[in-house]
Image 1 (cartoon, helix red, strand yellow):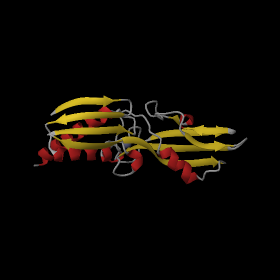
Image 2 (cartoon, rainbow, N blue to C red):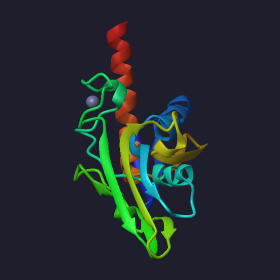
Image 3 (cartoon, protein in one colour):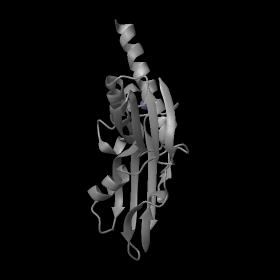
Image 4 (cartoon, rainbow, N blue to C red):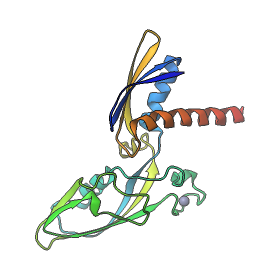
Amino acid sequence: MEIEVIEKNRDEIKLKVKGITPGIAAIIRRVIIAEIPTMAIEWVDFYKNDSVLPDEAIAHRLGLIPLTFDKNFHTLPNKCDCEGKGCVKCQVKLYLYKKGPGYVYSGDLKSSDEKVKPLYDKIPITYLNEDEELELEAIAQLGLGKEHAKWQAGNCGYSYNDSEFIFNIETTSFYKPEELFEEAINLILEKLIELKNKV
Ligand SMILES: [Zn+2]
């Protein structure tokens, strides 16, 4: 496999890839969109919500905030040693309290784990008028894009001609776009080894 970077910025990368089959290209795309774990808020407990937005709308917005994490420490709940009971490796608590007037931003979330926090601080969540309060506790977990779009690590498309593939990869998560390609290759290799061991 030969890889050449054609264009690159913070969110997107364009790669020329030679020496792979159309089948492999399709698998790489599918893995980037559906199979690379990312961290997102899954559960929200509201203690107080005086804002104009109902609880469900705020929970939905919180779910879409990309969160940082440590891929060598944090684990998917169904692959964790605690067997899904919930521990520091598969669940992260976040707390938010704000009193109006003013906007509530992603950066107002306080995390119990310094490695897990919003990738961007200025994503607006809701607005509070004078003396209105918002207080909630949330739990973030790793998940996969195929389970819910909020866990989608990135977007990927490609074109094919003259025995080479041009991949366009865009990150929507903590990963850099070039890391998504790398992660996809690693995951595919992992799956092949798993398969080989089963045969
Ligand atoms: Zn666990």
